[in-house]
Length: 217
Image (cartoon, rainbow, N blue to C red; front, side, top):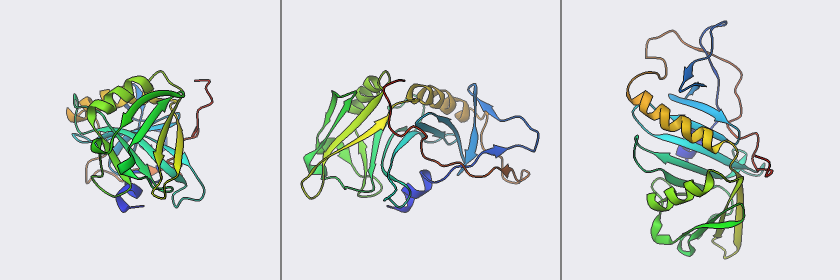
């Protein structure tokens, strides 16, 4: 697993603005600060934004065998408001053969087929960015769903299937779209350099409490 993945998928803390202070709010949600990001927790998803920069909606597939406790990651991200959301997939275990392409299903129904020509690896060989049109189509189909499955062929030729919960996706997406606009306008964000050092609670795990949906959402 590459260092970049470790940074934006690592353990999270809750910002406390003084012992008795009320939690910070942005777009009608309680927010937390970590890695100079503003974030919320929404069931299976973590939504994060940096002021004037990238927003992500992230979930993981838990696996104790993996170095950070998860074997795969699914995220939607965009660089600025009004841009297209892009699907990002990461495999830590069972690495994918990109040439074979991917397919995605939502609640066991075909959603999108992704050819190798629509897959890029912008940061590392096990992080895959999917084209915006396909990502938009998948996101639309995912919002009312309970689970999403990533189907691919491993590098040793075996079919592999990874299921993620979609619980909390709509709330995370709505917050990220609002927060990206608000943060770009300078309405909130991490403490400015030189401000009083914030106090943090004990770290919360940066993995979902509902890693696989139960169909009840």
